[in-house]
Length: 105
Image (cartoon, rainbow, N blue to C red; front, side, top):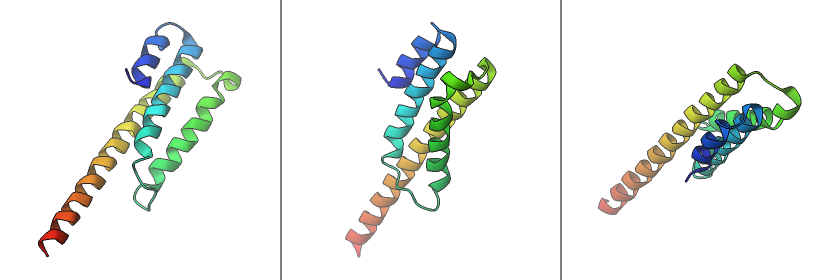
């Protein structure tokens, strides 16, 4: 079971703490995907946004954001996770095409 799914189960059980666990699970999934996406000009904003969101989530205990704010941030983490997976697939496909092209030449 992924960290995000595990976090979803916990989020049902407990307000801020549950939302924080869910966000941390989403961040872990995002990080796992971003490790396979090199930082370059095209992906720089994605990496920087992930870092900024991680900082925000770590402050939730002190800042006590409302439920709508927490839900919005989790939605953004889900979207970033999808974007990171897309980049990973694009980069893998590009490497495969380059490899096939070099073999033919």
